[in-house]
Length: 130
Image (cartoon, rainbow, N blue to C red; front, side):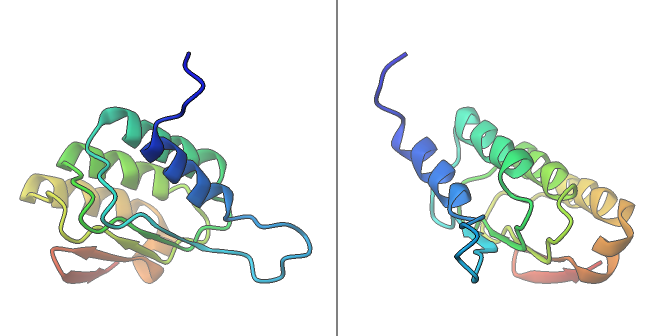
């Protein structure tokens, strides 16, 4: 492969790698904001989901406003997010959320008890407390 990593891939990875901090860093980062970063390509979505599965144990907030995510991409992200123990906010505003997608999300988010009470999902500017 080439030694130069795709800049968007590098950006996504660096945001997640900053999460844990180190033992000396008392204020651990718990938010990843990728708003306005175009994640339209499948490889970017794959990297995002990979990071969600491997680098985000402490993650509380994930902001993905206006990332060009399709309904399929949003569902993939939500399935990864639902595994995270500390998540309190997932911001998907200004992405392509259609009624079918909303129905799938509702199904994902009601499976986990804690998500019913703590997760605030921003869909098209509508706050859905589950």
